[in-house]
Length: 132
Image: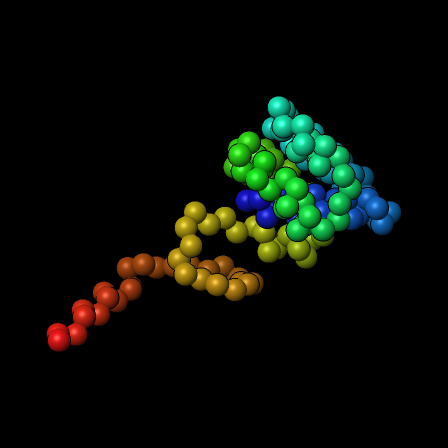
């Protein structure tokens, strides 16, 4: 769920720098950073990178992505909830792309705009190899 966190950080920073941040965005951005600071105790480089007001998710990913995974922040439900709320407040259209939680990839690729259900019971068995 690193993507959700870095997207939220970028959206919060972008809204703050452009002057379009409302109170909910500003509060959400500060909350998310505070939660991440706690997770990054003992990681001075990650904490320093967190203080940047970067607006590109890819830059956030490069700077703190490994720390998000290693520290357990990417799996922390409180951090993920704060990131989703911030995304929702800063950019409601972007939020729709990050609300899906998948524990396994079932082979679906693409962007879905409605509920998707995988029913593994209807899969055909694999074709046996040809005798040769």
